[in-house]
View 1 (cartoon, rainbow, N blue to C red):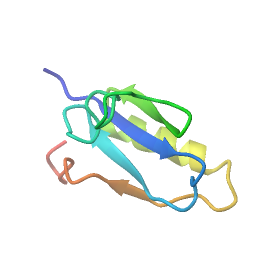
View 2: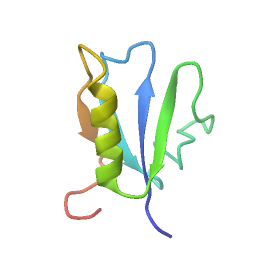
View 3: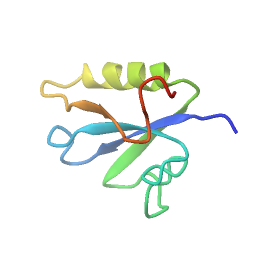
View 4: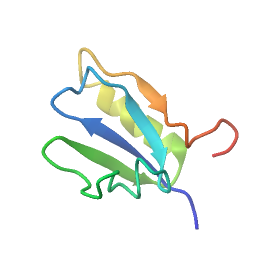
Length: 84
């Protein structure tokens, strides 16, 4: 199976929490369905799937550029440098 990548944007506390980039098979992500299996909802949304990590990061940087106080972008522990 080929890895894909997602990020989750939390509302309404968008700028208060870091946004994590996840692999699709991460326990936090579960192919963009999240821990509870509900996917995107009124409290936030999953961006993705992206075929490459770099595409997920670029999309998130583009989204962040639209806000005055953008959140920090963080790699989930499921992503290890050199193991993408």
